[in-house]
Length: 68
Image (cartoon, rainbow, N blue to C red; front, side):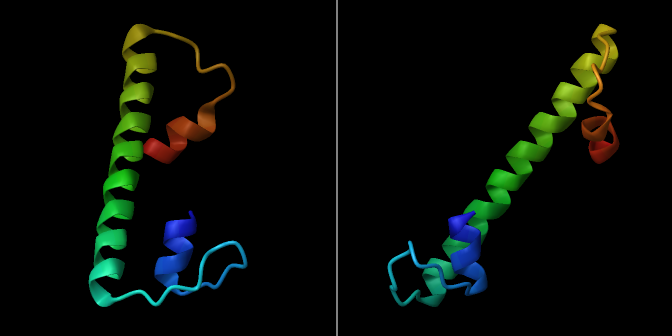
């Protein structure tokens, strides 16, 4: 999230005040998109495994609704 905050221009006290070049911002945006894509795929696969395997959702319906 610190990378996303830095990309959006949010200044945090714990981050060093480095001037980011356009290439740095583009690289950070690409990394964030790749991570979000990977997490989305993981959520979908976990949901499908539960659905196909016949396991109960144990009250985790938010994850099911989020992936559908």
